[in-house]
Amino acid sequence: MSELQRVHTDQAPAAIGPYSQAIVVDGWVYCSGQIPLDPTSGELVGGDIATQTHQSLRNLAQVLQAAGSSLQNVVKTTVFLSDMNDFAAMNEVYAEHFGDHRPARAAVQAAALPKFCDVEIECVARVAS
Image (cartoon, rainbow, N blue to C red; front, side, top):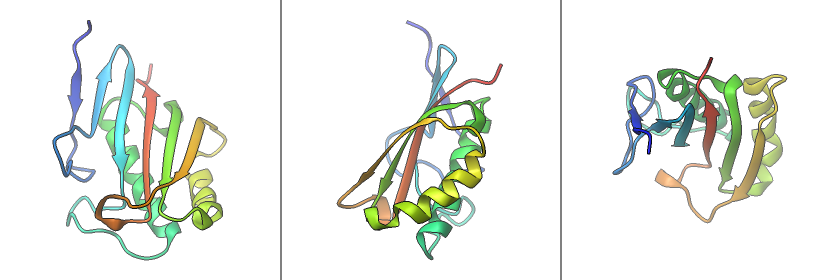
């Protein structure tokens, strides 16, 4: 079995439990879910779903960069929403961050998310070549 490399960056919120921001193995990056926490203060970014989605994706991009990847190398995302009625607004922001890149995606409504935020996004990506 290949060695697992734990990823940590101060440019994204620290893990709030016994897990890593991401794991790299065999050229793949497995990112833990990112919620809209400000990486400097550790506080939840308030506001609407668009604001929270921007912050979650900025955090995810920082973790990917620390792992030697980027949003353009993402193969699959999972978006967790506290309310599926926020899907359209989240989707608009998501499209801004991914541009023409269209990774596979699932979006699900969750009864509750960490720190009772409105969105959490995780992904699997390839390490940049």
